[in-house]
Length: 285
Picture 1: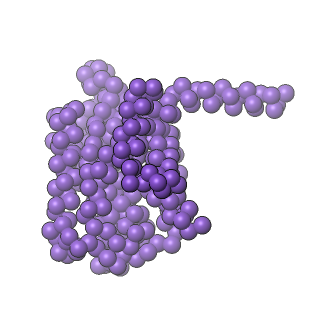
Picture 2: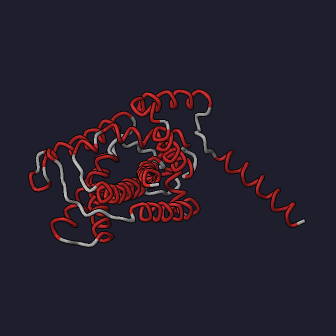
Picture 3: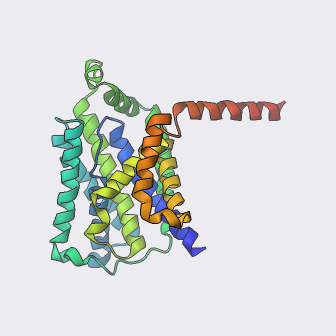
């Protein structure tokens, strides 16, 4: 039972991280720096808890806020670039954060940061955050800001012509994505009780991208589904645990060939709505 709780908790944290990537992705910004924001949230909340004795929830929120502020400033140079250059910028940011934490003695440097208070209810907190994100993205999708996000992601020039402030939209998306990643990092730190810079390398950012692409990029349910499934499969099939990244690579290739929109697409949602309406219609009749 403890093993199932552990796997489910990590899956919940990875869902949060996948959503932190998906938010800036809505505006056309592909970030390889989400592990860096996760590290900022993890270390920030750990410092609040260990060094200053701040309670769990405020510590998590402070760590997330610091990550969001850093995301805002990282997003400023990201406004002028896109595509492979944005990937390189965010990749460099993630590596800079990791190297900085390796050299800061106050937080344990390369030896890591031990003694973080363990949170017994990490599973509950992680899925409370997932539930909040479901509500947030559901409301965002139908809001003016959500439509602006999709407009910028589809065609920046057209969005600017119809009056969308591209600068503010991109900065809001990038900083909010950083905040969400920071929250995920804080939950992760208090669940693991120990963190080190190597836990937040660029390969974790790649995993979050894989979750999103596998699950689907057309609607927010896709990244959630991808993160949950791709976290669970290697854990229950321990034989392929060492081949985790190879499995992800193969899945990406297969998805790009057979279903580039991901497992969960708009057509999937529409199909489920039709099925549910028919079932409800029969039940009412």
